[in-house]
Amino acid sequence: EFREFRILRHSIPPFIPLERLRSRFLPWHLREFLELLFQHLNAFVGRRQQLREFQEEFSEWIQGSPRGNSRCDLLSFSYGIPGKSGNS
Image (cartoon, rainbow, N blue to C red; front, side, top):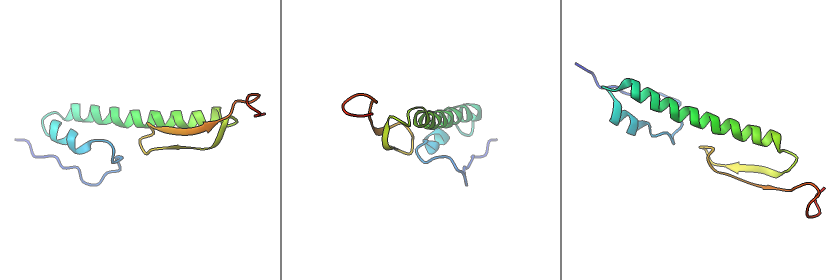
């Protein structure tokens, strides 16, 4: 007999639909639950890394600091192209 899984203390970002995943897959489909959770976390970490690389690669073109949301899936920034429109 399966016992109900409970997720108590965790550091999973709040935008990951943890409760929805839990209610859909636990307790019978633990592997699927973990696979989807991994996909969500991996996608978030990948987007965050892309943001860091973007900021490093194009730092001389970005004006000010880029603004984004906690998911790192929305980014707002201003930029200037050297040699265009009076920029150097």
